[in-house]
Image 1 (cartoon, rainbow, N blue to C red):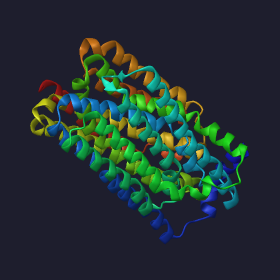
Image 2 (image 1 turned 180 degrees about the horizontal axis):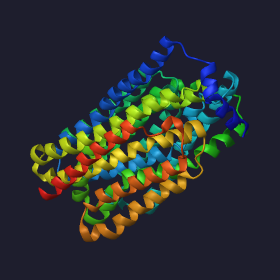
Image 3 (image 1 turned 90 degrees about the vertical axis):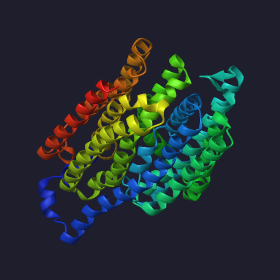
Length: 466
């Protein structure tokens, strides 16, 4: 309560008048998010672009059935890299801004890093033991390949959860880029050799995940070393981290359900080939999430600085640009992605073009939800209902897929994703409530209307030109 009163005083108009910012400092503050967003986008373009190009190359080199198995393994890997964070990424980011002294901050990270390092490794061992003792195949895949991917995902979470969050919060973008890109290039190169040249199939893909996870763990270890072996720890810090982070775990897992689980459902109903075709469309639409997500990473420190210097107006202007840029990217991918796949992709994948505009719009709505979510996690520290909100959206997604996919075909997965992301955006915005720093402006509303109209029109054109 006291923290809330202090925050209200900090962002009051009188407080802003009492502490005017020098023009040069204000201009520097405005340019830094744009610069950082550009760097994050560049890093993401390389990080995500390498696997994206890899999949496009492999689509021409391997059967659709193998491509579908790669998609299933990617979905499992995504599940583990999400679950093994235990919801602590936002906690690790917020910790940079939430402590009054360096000693308290170090104690907090001593405690958090021990948990986020040991926890994922223990989770991997448990899952591997269960799978090894209960089944030989799962979702048309050998269990050995699944276990290998599980290990890779958990190692990546152990190595990256806290280091990447701290680097973003500290705006150490150059170091962040190195820590992110090295494992990405190692994974892409390994998978290309094992799957595209040596034809190791699903096991080669899984082995690439394991090597990538081990690389991420090794390259980020120097950023965790002092905290891992630091003696000062605190149970109260751990309880506080769990209080904020654990409610986010169902939220994080539901996010995986919304974005990746459809590959598993499609593979279960229609086999790996159908999953491969849908995964190709989803891979193209993922461009929206990659670029808009990195824009969000670039502006995220502004939310933390509101706790320190009360720049609510700067945050509002930045959020306006973020929203317009997000929908512009979604519109470009919806139109350009559909046209490119429909006319240029390998013949076996051209039917995927129909779903790209739907998934691009869904991705745009998902990235708009980042704004109220940033406010809840960084400024308000209020996440208790997010598990219910995200779980509800995920339940709608699964319900639509399970009931309608067998009847209407795999295109249902695209519309179930769109429906679920819209619900997620609406519920999260309602829960966040009104806050000046994230309010919609008239200009952003007008631009959103135009860009949404373009995407809906493209969805209609794609449907009638199948």
